[in-house]
Length: 449
Image (cartoon, rainbow, N blue to C red):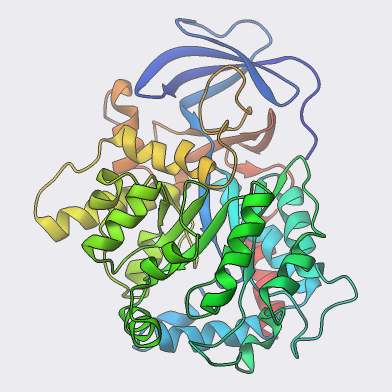
């Protein structure tokens, strides 16, 4: 990703500046970063780029499985559970090659840019060929994802994932052979070959406590600590995993992770759905983050996680679109609040500003970019503009733009997305991928074939 080298000024009709909406804001940008923020600029200065609507910091999709986008619609036929859905998901994972994964991910990341997302955390575990044999380049699949993000114009944190077993004490099944490096040490050796770029960070992930033996958890945590890298883990998404963990180890998955040094401020638990009070205290007390994925959690009938208790206990919240049932971070933010309203039958658990922080600054921090997600001097020049005159957003006062964005707008209302000072989406059209719907259709068709 090449940042802009000349100074450029963007005039924002309205801008969300941390806690409030300001009219008439001028952002000066150079070398991909914001160099000045001026408020009270009533009209666009000559030569400025004009962004009509409400400009927000770029959104962070903290949890993605890019190839799951190919399942959209397919998995809505018939009934079932998470475990029956997983079998369909495996059938798509079986078909991926570096080339087909690159094409699909490029289109998916372009769809994210159209939704105002400027950075993605890709939870990546499809590493090897179908039979488990490493490719000539052992990181061919990860490199395909990194290149796809560059071509789609967004930033990526590749969360290279350890996946070693089918369950507690069980070897990988036929579908999972291509996920496994054989051991955490072998994973660390391969992962260390990946190099960071301007647009790409390298992080680590533990797929789950069922997929990584307890005696190898510390190896992954140590690698993340040594590389000062973010570390993510699927945690307590299903009660069946909690029950199996207790049978195998006599404790909850959260306690198992805590006992092996996995928890901490650099770590994010994804889902964190079925937790005990002790689990919540362990996560919050260690500063471990929580990534909620409400559209996936409801699509897979997972349940509603204790987001309020987690945040109150000290666990920062971020958001992800996970299986990409939809790609819409505004919907994820809205769903987290509305799920809690359904559960408690009370309203107003988070302000719109708090939900936007989860979708932006706190999400970027979870991806190892703590300087992103704000419209401040020195921050990356990554931002997105929401229309305030669509059929969904017209009517409310502009000063209520944050509330309008969270509780009424959708990804369809994104008009502009700027990454590193460069327009990736202009007037609702992607500037780098000419026909995103066609690219998606072609990539999914090729994968199904």
